[in-house]
Image (cartoon, rainbow, N blue to C red; front, side):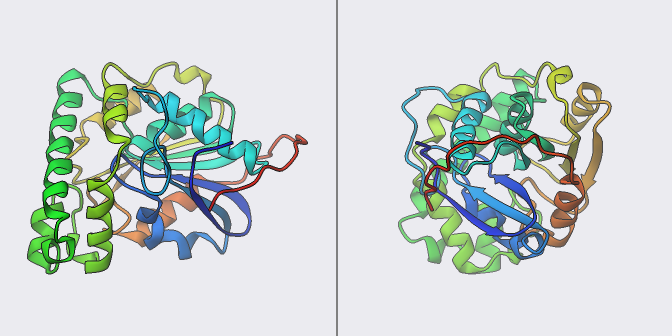
Length: 275
């Protein structure tokens, strides 16, 4: 059985959406209505985030997270899917492609193209964000109840934090403050890099946020060198979590990236889905 909570909406080719560290499946809400007329969308919570309980492993690399996503795909009787992920979710998406479970992959500022100093910088900044969220979570709505306060709490994550509502910002703050999967995921990041691009046999799109302050955009150059045959784009005007900054641009990139490819037939008993 999969540990992963999820929602499933829409029709068409299956598209799995994977969030970043400290986030949850609701981060995709701004783009869902733009995707579901053309895609059968599964938005999930990784282990220890959102409504998914933590996994037993003390360290979770993107490869480990991908194994949990594979268990969910097996439950849903989905042999191959289009996959899109942001940050941690981008690294997980690439690992699903390496495992042969992806028809296409679209990564929004994915992890794994950093050097040691950049990884340490990202971890320090995110750990400070988690610590701040735990303090502010005592009164989350008050902490993010106006555009100035939202900017102060999330300007390093979003380019346009004022586009989030108070309810959305408070929910995101609460989720970050109560994410037991963070420590295992941080431990799994150390020393983890994207490797073995030759093992990926599906179309790949890499879209880097122009104003990313967590995974700085120069990492996009390493992604280009590692995956020269991929489609490389810049998310103009967007920060590290781009779905609120420009949902129209993000949805367009996801739909273009999840172009239809044949899926191998395979029969398996249907498992129960956890929603």
